[in-house]
Picture 1 (cartoon, rainbow, N blue to C red):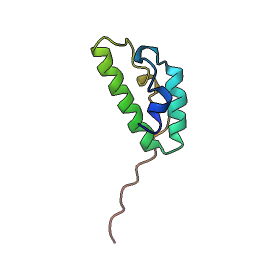
Picture 2: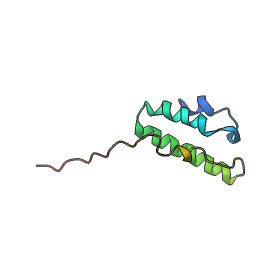
Picture 3: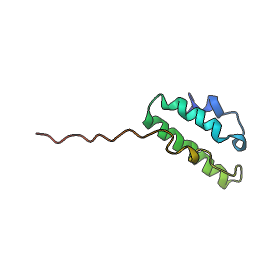
Picture 4: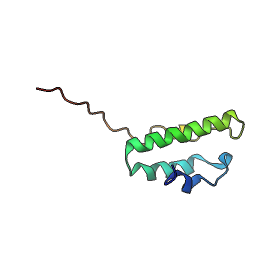
Length: 81
């Protein structure tokens, strides 16, 4: 969060962050790996949900980014011979 999210949107008021801001942010983080970007999107979404409950914003733009990056297929450990 400190290395990627806060420099990009950390100083913006929560009510001014748009879907387009998060789209650029999520695609940039996706280069690090799909599992990382899924976690970061969930954390951002939880922040927006909390702020909406407090009356600081009306919508969660992070929820609109769901499915933007495909989750990698799960590879289970093969059984021992």
